[in-house]
Image 1 (cartoon, rainbow, N blue to C red):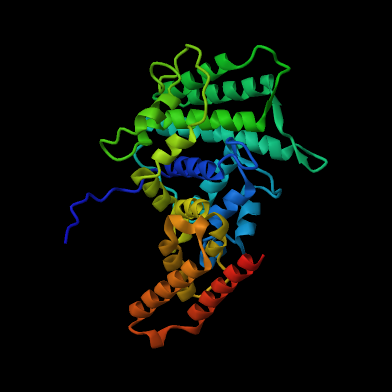
Image 2 (image 1 turned 120 degrees about the vertical axis):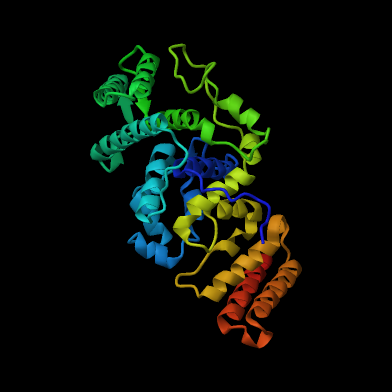
Length: 361
């Protein structure tokens, strides 16, 4: 039976990662770190629901191992440069990275931005002094990198003009003073801006959704954002929290579904981040134990779904009722209460015990 709704193809993975970045930043609400980086714990929340079989496919034993392997050994805030590379490598390793909807010119420009990203990270990681990564570049260093990328694009011949024009515009924007240091976080913020402007045509909500107008205004830097004209760009600010929340509809759901492929079919990464933010003090309900049985995973999904937006005000009595409903639903799905597994009941009792301990404290 047809639902009357057109089946949409998964969106481009790079666009999905941009949506997920914005959702993660918004979930922080400015706590502990500013909006230009992700707290280490925010990334942990985004990856906490990875099934163990996916962790094994990444050659990691836990979510912490994934974080350390793909985002760096130190538990420091993660800027967009590190986030983009780390998440992209994870998707590629899991064979879930997809390029969709981009024309050839856009693909070339994104590829050039990737080369810039990788060159910055490789240089930074190769220059470590006393355990501290080199965290700034001179204007002259950036000029050389921009020029190298421009020449590389020119050598590729026909169709590379937009890439050349892009780097020419970036060269003109560099400060005149060669001694001015540019930090890795500054570079990451610029890279995020460039990528969002470039992919703006793909970052759309459902057809007919007018809520994109505010986001469009935030991304505009001149009369034609994609042209990278010679006119100086206006000062750019990251999308506001209000704008980010407006995009947590169908577009965010689509992005979450694409990125969540690396976590199998047990949950959405972006949905987990958003749910953790809504649950507040009750977010411990989302934490999975190592080698958790399938029925326990299903029980948690049912319970968290029933909690919904009322999580921060969760009381002992309400949790008891929600757990009873979730266990009953699980029993019905199995064909009767007698078939409830001990593992599911044990998980329910552990959740209740956790609430009791927190209430006593």
